[in-house]
Image (cartoon, rainbow, N blue to C red; front, side, top):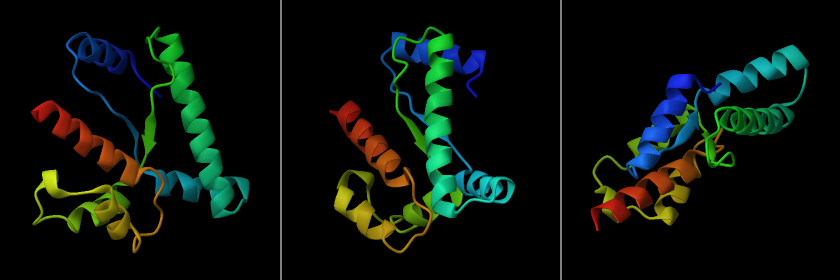
Length: 130
């Protein structure tokens, strides 16, 4: 769900050319709940979460008259994200590559959009610094 306040923040950020990222957190909890309530496999629950989240965000953005209803939403779990990020604590962000992220993520279960979010955040930070 995207609140009216969220929509106002998105609009103001766009007005001042501030990058924004829509992030759906706690994916593992939602996957577990879907599995229990619908009696489906983890893979089916992941697909449903992704589909439902993207449709819901698009619908909310359209209802809020946001100019890009297809804005990407990242579906992540904070624990999964934390596991990936913790492997880079001694590395400066400007040196991290997509290969580094993918390599760190190989040992982490439950990844949906965590690597994509991190790479897009890093790319955006690099672009804005130059």
